[in-house]
Length: 79
Image (cartoon, rainbow, N blue to C red; front, side, top):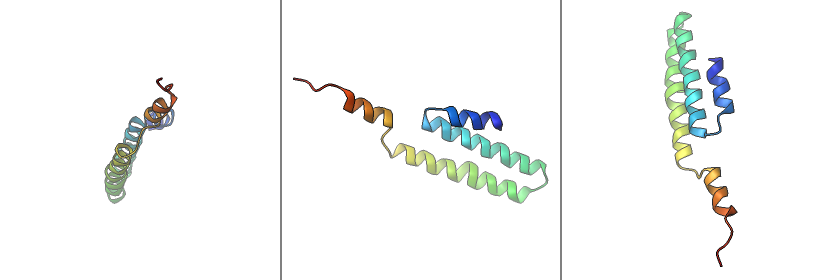
């Protein structure tokens, strides 16, 4: 879980960072299951893994990437 958290923080690509946070939520839900809290595990799996990850991915798809936007403005004008 710690490795996935560090991966999410140092990742420059937002999509991979979101996938890393989804992995963190998946591991956390498995840990809740081992701790005999199936209701909390199910809630964490539904909200943390599924809903939050899907919302972040949809948001990333609907926005312009910073790298693409900065490359467009940094090119010199043609004469």
